[in-house]
Length: 185
Image (cartoon, rainbow, N blue to C red; front, side, top):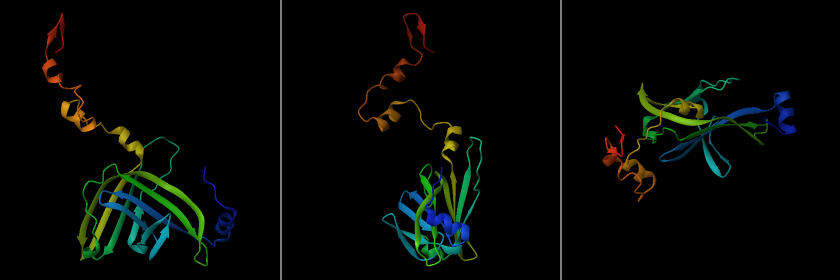
């Protein structure tokens, strides 16, 4: 259930509140914080960079069914030299979209709401007519339930998770071994 202050509710009724999106991305090179206005805004102890009309999002859905959803973000019309984000592996890293509101005097309401919380799938960048276009696809956490786990029950995999563990040392020697009337193959 979403709760809002009385001041925000009244401002929403009268049309005196402007909604803005704040996007947090847990990028491997460091956190990325963007918002839909212009300039830099300080919020929750961090600076959020304004992308204004250069940013867009698509795929916002709401459903009563338990299903995976996809939300994509794009940033276009930017000088390619200003884009420093690498498009490396962002898969399964956190992405959160918040909503915040401004009053007519450009004062922020204390209220904020999480509109979307998911994981990043992939990030691409390309140049289009001399301008950089960055696109990010995210999924709701349910998306990963439909994927097979990318692990194998091997000594090497066990060492990555639990260095020094010897539990899988004998797995290879047990393959196709017959013991006390049991055929393990």
